[in-house]
Structure formats: C-alpha cells, structure tokens
Length: 572
Image (cartoon, rainbow, N blue to C red; front, side, top):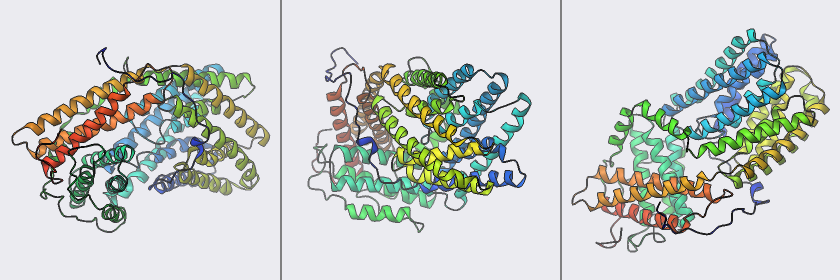
C-alpha cells in the first residue's frame, strides 16, 4: 500500500460488550452430526474398557474419540484426509505430553510444556483452518495428560489406545459417505440458496456479504468433493441460481444490476434449499437464464485441483507459520497467557493447574473483542457447569455404567447446545471434563469443584489480560494484503470481461477468484476492526473495494447470461 492511502480514524482501545456475547443464536443446521459422532466414537472404546475392567484408561481413548468432532463441514473426500490429520496430530500431542509427564514431576516445567503445546496447536489449527472445535480439544487433552501419573514404559501402550480410538473416530466421521456421499455438498448448497433468498428479501451489505460467503463455501465444497456425479451436477446448477439471485438483486451495490430484470423468487430458492437438505432427490432446476446445462469451468478447476501437488499445500502452510505471518502474535498471546495462567494457578495452590491453561487457551480468537466475548462465555458456562457437576456427581458414583452414561449424555448435550452459544455448551462440557477424572478414581468433590472454579477465574482473567497487552499489529497488514489481492482479482475479472469473446471457463474462474478475495477481505477487515492498538485502517477503501467487486461480479454474471443485462454498457 502506498503512503497516500486514505485511512480512517479509530480508537486504539474499543469498548467491550457485556450482553451481546451471551445472546443465544439459532442452532446449526448440522449440530446433531458431531453430537452423534462423538457419542458413538466414545461409547465403543468406553464399553470395551468396561468389559475388561480397565476404565482407568478412558483418558487415553478419549483423546482419540474426541477427534470425531472434526471435519463435519467438509466433503467426505477432504474429510477423510482432514480427520486422519487430526488423529495423527492428537497422537503426536499426546506423545509429547506423556513423555514429559514421565520424565519430570516439576509442575513449573509441565506448565511451560503445556503453554508451548497450546500455542503450537492454536497456530496449526488456524493455519489449516480445520474449523470448529479448533485447538481447544487438543489443548484440553494434552494439558490433562501432562498431569497424569505416567511411566515411560507405559507411553507406547497409552498412545496405541489413543490411535485405536482415533481410528474408530475416523470410521464414524467418514462412514456416512456410504449412505449419503453428497451430504456435505447438499448442506453447503442449501445454505447458499437460503443466504441468496435472504439477500433478495432484504438487500443490504450485511445480507449480501453473508450470501457471497455462503456461495463461495458451496463452490469450495463442490470443487473439493471429488469426481462429478449427477447429484453434484444438479447442486452446481443450484449454486449458479444462487449466484444469479445475487447478481439480479444487487441494487444496493451495483448500478449494472438490472432494475428491469425480474428478481429471483426467494420462496423458490428456499423451497430448493429445503428439498436439497432433505433425503429425497435433489431438485433439478432449469438452467439459469441464458445458460446451458454445461457449467462454466468447474471441471477444469476440479482437474487443476487434482493435479496440484501436495508440496504446494505444504509450502502454503509453512508460509502461514513463517516470520511475518499474522498468526505469530496470536501464538505469542496463547503462549504467554497460558503460561501465566498456569503459574498463577500454581501459586494459588492448585496442584494440577491444567484447567487454567485450557481456559486461557480457549479464549484466544481472531482479535481482542472476540477473545473478550469468549472470556465472558467461558466463565459463565464453566461456573454453571460446576453446579451441574455437583448435582450429578452422587448419581454418577453409583456405578461405572452410570458414569459412562453421564459422560455420553454431556458429550451429546455439549454439541447440541454449543452452536447456540459457547457458554451454553460449556455448561455441558464442564461436568463431562470433571467426570472423566472419576474413571481414574474418586476425588473429593469439594477439591474438584474448588480447583475448577479457581482455575476458571484465573485462566479467564490472566488470559484476557494477555490478549489485551500482547499486540497484533499484523492484523492491519493482513487487511492491506487482502485489499491488494481484491484489487488484483477485480482487475483480472475486468480484463476477462474486456475480451471480445471471453470463454465461459475464463469468466467463471475470474468470478470465483474475485468471490474468494471478497470473502477474505471481509474476514480480514472484521479481524482488524476488533483488534486493539492498531494503526488506522483503510475502511473507506475496503468499502469501495467491496462495492466495486460486487459490481464486477454482477457484470460477469450479465456477460455469462446468468441475468438479463439492464444496459449494454454498464460500469464495471
């Protein structure tokens, strides 16, 4: 960016909300999938250990079982690789923790190892964008393992249990492909149709941004899903209709959008979304206005993805972790915050301060504002969860099957509630985490509850303090790079439009590249806007880039025939 860039003035320190972070949202349209998966993946090893009277090993199988929470938003082809990577990463993290626990009994050293692991797990999950639940599951498991009594000779056997449970998780998460192999793509397409309908119903910057992001996610799912099938072809046509609705209703952002062209029917889009989510056949709409049954460039792009080497993917990962990466300040926050939380908890008399480390690690989101929100949610949820634990503890001690049943129930409840708000899910997560300790032997209830409350308060307080004091000025740099990338993508699309006879594949590739850059620009702007101690951000330029980008997207749709042109020579 040049020195002449016009920048907006904004305060270095923003007001932090109190009520908004605690409001409930609508549940996810797929909350039941991770909920059921984790129940099955946990029940199988738990019941096997019960049969051989070795429930004291549940902590090691739990590490692998919780891998079933990942990858549910991915097509099965990608999910298989992603969950396999999660299982391998979990085994590596457990190996580090168990070896450290067997080599030293120093709480100070173990806290340092836990903080280093938490920082590495946060950066790796953010770099790979593995998605919810992100690094918190890794940190929860590996931090607990650090403070479990351990001998070096036991480590291989315990790691084998983790790996075996991880294989069960992989089978549980990938197994539904046998029944409904296009399920993830269908859900992504339905979200795009619903978002497009919401935009057509209430045009505006917020609904348009949401619809563009949903359409982009749908294309990413379809392109990563593997070879085309009749169902995927129908889904691609539905996504084209969602794009046509965005272009045809872009009155707020695009003077080229057709005032005379009929807007897409939002009820028809919603009906298609309902049918797409259902178990019946995918609706087969007619081609979008002016298009043929052949779709623009999807096969070419899919082939390009297949030929792209894994070396390129590894290089991209290394770049995201290299010096200068915007992830490094976040990693520093996690390292400092977790270490301080652990040491303060140790000084307060907690013998195993792993929950303070986990609490601090769970707070760190993309910026300070979001981290503050998570601190409120985590503290409220944990404190209420401790009360639930106190209520169910006497019943859970009536027998091992009761203990297993409660753990499975709270695992399901956590996933059922957490998409509504993190604090609501934490009410179920907290008693589940405390009940897992009971498999290794009973502990005084007062000690468990007191330590957990103290660790929660210390972890949240020290963690958010570290988030406020460890600055992330690279967030503004990421925004500037995203702004430049959007300008380049728009220039590329304009160049494709200016060709006398542009090929459909070229226009389609240019449109998808511009869509992806607009999604990244919005994410970078939201991240930088919630960060403290930033230099002034180019907010006027971001808004102008978004408006120009949406105008160009509408122009490519007009040129391709997705909508009828309102005028022959519109501004691009």
